[in-house]
Image (cartoon, rainbow, N blue to C red; front, side, top):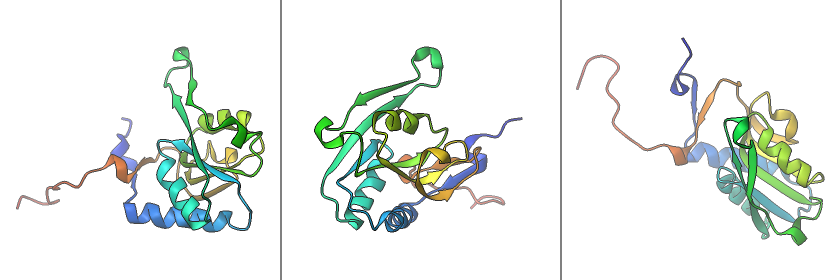
Amino acid sequence: MDRLPHEKGFHVSWDQLHRDARALAWRLDGTDWRAVVAVTRGGLVPAMIVARELDIRTIDTISVKSYLRQEQGGIQVLKHPDKELMGDGDGILVIDDLVDSGRTLELVREMYPKAHFGTVYAKPKGKGVVQTYVTEVSQDTWIFFPWDMALQYVQPYRGED
């Protein structure tokens, strides 16, 4: 029987995400980046934290939608960053929360080959697409990000209250 996503889950709190995004910024320090581009939606929060830590004021977004089935078109860019800002990506820092298969960031890399790609978390299939990441998780791990979660009551392991 296949595992459900929560059975091999990696739960990330807001505090943990903040610490990990700051660690990503520390790894990216030492270069004068012209701008940060967040891959929406998951890259918005880490990109904001990285931009704050590295004192980068120019921030833009690229919105990419992935389809599960190839016959639906695969991947589509819904919103491009400013063309004049981006150029070929030189001096641009592209930030996402996670690289999984790498398909999304491969498309972005085709568009901006000189950009530097950073993610907070990386899975084995996709980690070769990014130059900088903080934490590697196994391919079959499901990451639960804080924006996808809500606090709720949990039944005790043994018995009832």
